[in-house]
Length: 89
Image 1: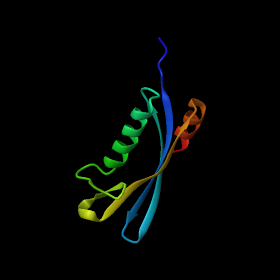
Image 2: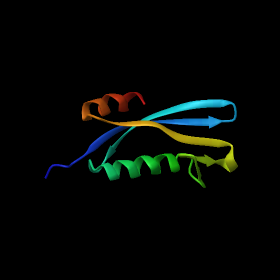
Image 3: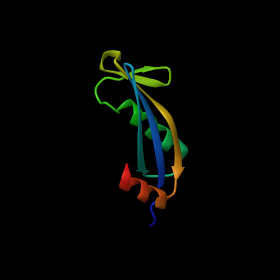
Image 4: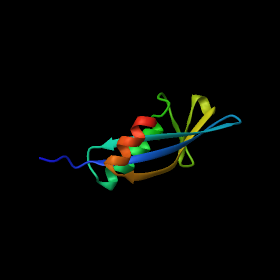
């Protein structure tokens, strides 16, 4: 039986004091349902630094409010794109 998978590319924005960073990653999900993808992306940003995350304005604060991480964007990609990007990210 063929596995029904979906590949996604995620960009997160991090604000840490005066510094801002972009984190990019690719992931393979177990199915291609939109609800699965939305849940995965939300959990990915929520667990980015581990520990306690405080939700705020579409993102999460970590380390007592010193670091803020939010979803910049995400999009579906093909398996071929996933395989190439996975080599470099």
